[in-house]
Length: 197
Image (cartoon, rainbow, N blue to C red; front, side, top):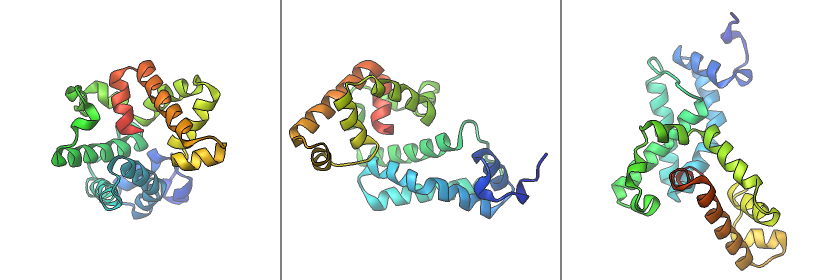
């Protein structure tokens, strides 16, 4: 068995990093932080639209991970765990602010994040595979607009300028793309996707 302590932390897998974190390695924890801090912040900010709250949520997730390191057990992927941890904290904020209803409409029971179904759906790799399949099947221009919006985080105005089309066309195509995803993925997965994506 190789000695993980001898390898540069930047070369280690997430699984190996967590093994070292459980042993109290601050270097391994810092590497986990560097790998996921920015991604988790973007993810949280997209949900909350508040920079301070997004930063606080991500910081709390990492603090919790470090404080529980000795008993921490990774049941799925590290990325899946971290994203779900952020998502759960976002849910708590929404519940506190009484605005969760605008996200789940009439599907209140889908918000039970500890259920087996939702736990499966919010895992990054699982939902990403479903979504990517449907995105790939979109008409070329719709897919292009969708990916610029969702993956490059461009505004409607920026997309219109890049593609030399009207902002109205961009908005219309995005609405159609989301409607298509809802139809193809089904309501349960779509609700989770809106929260997750």
